[in-house]
Length: 460
Image (cartoon, one colour):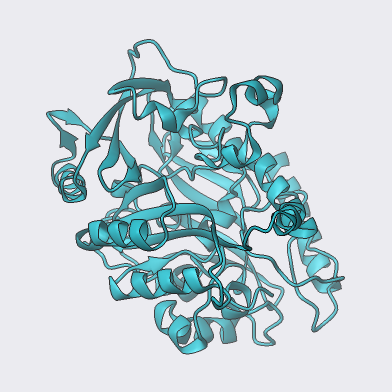
């Protein structure tokens, strides 16, 4: 009861802070961490008070659900669910991603080949709308339109204050098989086979992702939940997880360490800070080996441009940030990877197969108009994060624009947490513009919240 009362007080504080934002000023959350990779225009308006909305309200082990506040991180949620032998159906890779962020901004991980995206496990959610009201949205009922349009709306329709999500059983450890492929078509055939059968070489597959080091060296990592683990590996110290794929055919991690295997080195991006050098790694405190620390360093660089000034002093070309996750239909994945290797040349890249859920769970039969993937279609999320030199005479964002064109030509989609360059017509076509406007007019009639296009492309 006390948790519910505290939650109600926190929602009241949020509503008061929203009412205090002057009309015409940008509305933003006052949050300590962010997993966005696009700069935003400055504002002097006060941020929304979400300080009391970062906890787990309750867990129902019998029903297999959790009631969670919108600013609760997956790190805190996992800490609460694992003692019950449960985990969310999809746990995004980075510890400080929030439940509300993963639903309004999308998320993905290695269970997505069977459990879809995080918003598909939402049973209901409370949303502070642009009209300043808190409504409870479910797959059916008076606010079903908001429930369907909320995923990928990026705060343009409102902010989740509470979400009820489904949980799934998890065991003590995850046994891994790192399967190497020298031809990309063999890799995609293997993904199709695992999805069709739910197993690989007679052993069930509970989780699946992969890494491509080059078109001739790719790995599919197949995980199976296990109660009787062999010796557990530890990649929070000197060993670095992604490097292990090249030297270990089999591996075992505790379930906790498996969920956060990518966070310690931000996949492989910690190399940019020297953290993968053995000497630096011994000196770099373990508590700082996590994605939110690296992200803060990136934000400092964006603000002060120290590395960019050093590059100019050394006569090096300026660099274009290429930080993207894209969904490509399975039958076009090999073609995209070869194109990307040839035209962009950034390695490694991450692979994560994805299918929307079958119409069995709450919300899973619903259309998701702001990120309209096809039911029954297998996609592969391809993630690549870094920068490339800007060629002489190149237009702003030229590499990112070419990626957007190629993704669209292959029938894919791109997440909007980073830079986007679409024109308005293309954006509306790809991201449900007509539906978004109808829901926007209903729940934010004065358009106080920044629009989706303005957030994603205009960086407002």
